[in-house]
Length: 119
Image 1 (cartoon, rainbow, N blue to C red):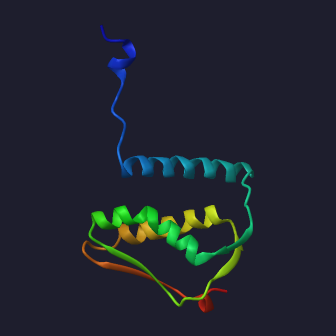
Image 2: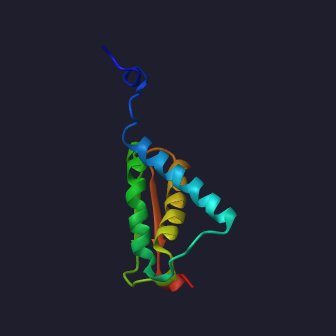
Image 3: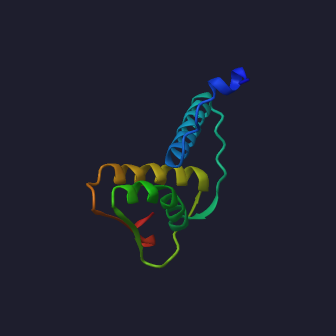
């Protein structure tokens, strides 16, 4: 005998879909916190290049699905700014994902980072 719950159970989404749904839900919750004035930024010295590399981890799957080579080029010096690591990673993730979305298949997408150009 099957239970009522087992008949209504649906398969869970897999892979990128779960990540994208999680990111979308997080973004919607962030938006509601911003509107309510309840966003807390954890300001600390962060290396923007490290944040950019962390953001690229989540974008590489989408890039490889389109056969796009995504690379950060850096001058080697750290780029330390005062900011919130998670928020900055979210901004850069959206930026990189849009770059992948609007780049044609089998292309290269590079992002040059130089500490001297960021003020």
